[in-house]
Image 1 (cartoon, rainbow, N blue to C red):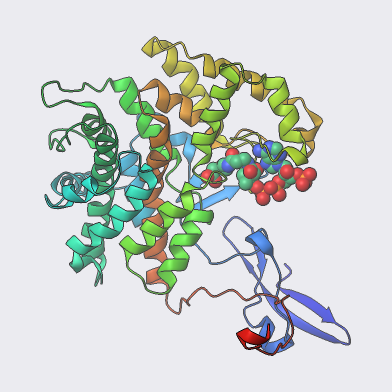
Image 2: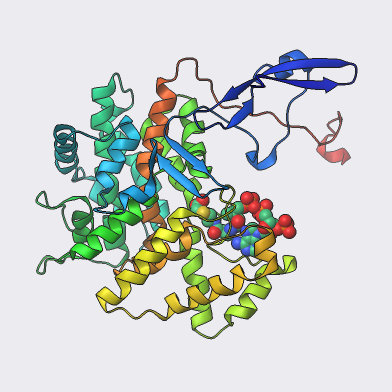
Length: 428
Ligand code: CMC
């Protein structure tokens, strides 16, 4: 087995060790490259840069494989349980019955927000984007739990993690209720994670929302399929913020902001807007695909393409199947599903997409499922955040527990002006 790489620069050659992961993925360890050679690497977008070693999630983009702690995600399809997956990602193994019960009890006990936090929502305009509220409120939450600024041991961390996973759902629901001018609905301790969330979103003080089992399962699956995806933009953000030893809440609030963008979690909203535009007759699927291929148009086929998956995104396949099953069960005949199918069909036969290995990603069908259960479009990325939170927490904790982990601080190649004299204002 090759265990060293040689770098030749001019007359000199340098040896660097090769590090190998459990699934055979190899990296050249260049930690002392600059010290030894005076050179750095340049990798905009970090497509070739391993920022850490991690034992949480494995992806093989060529083969369309995604595993959480070694378990293929397809194995979570039967009786999908987001809480169990959250525990698995964070603590590294499937919870025993006792661990599961204790974690669920912690989630239930910490679902409510400090009553004065309700007033924070009033300070936001009704039209405020829920992702802005979510990020701000996660930071605000930390002020009500100063004991979480410094987590001393695993037990302390477990309580903080459960608190965050539980409360983020309450914050999300309150943000929505505020946006539609309806009263906040308190969490119900008798309900499980997903039905409780839907209860806070959709119940009225005078009418209890009933969560159909088929809806509960679909949303559990949506959440757990978003739960981790190794070093994506938002998780890398959480790690980067955490690397300065910023607290868990601050790091996750930053993760929400990173997720917001349309090239990342915001793509699920962009997909729905794209489908809706086509549905309203503003543009045909064929014309949309033509524009997406035109570099001058700045249009992309939203929900298509992935930095890592170059074959298919297994999450997209599973969500497409759920959408196909769920909509008829709910009696929801959504024309947007037909448009999505049509777009997929056109793109998958088009050399532009085939050559670039662009396939539907997780965001292509998730919005159709959320829409079918009544979740408004501007809440889609919020649901992605709720789903991704266990991943962020797991990575923050893994990094915190790694001996010798360093503050993240990339370098750059400076391309600005050479040394230039300051000219006083009256001489410019
Ligand atoms: N529509 C049209 N062209 C595309 C698309 C697309 N959706 N995605 C990539 N391309 C083209 C791109 O123009 C480039 O072409 P060329 O080689 O001729 O310049 C080529 O494919 C490679 O694209 P890239 O931008 O270099 O690839 P990337 O790995 O930097 O970007 C991506 C990955 C997901 C940001 C990108 O595929 C994209 O913008 N997709 C649409 C947005 C989207 O669905 N995002 C959700 C990603 S999955 C969930 C998540 O991470 O949150």
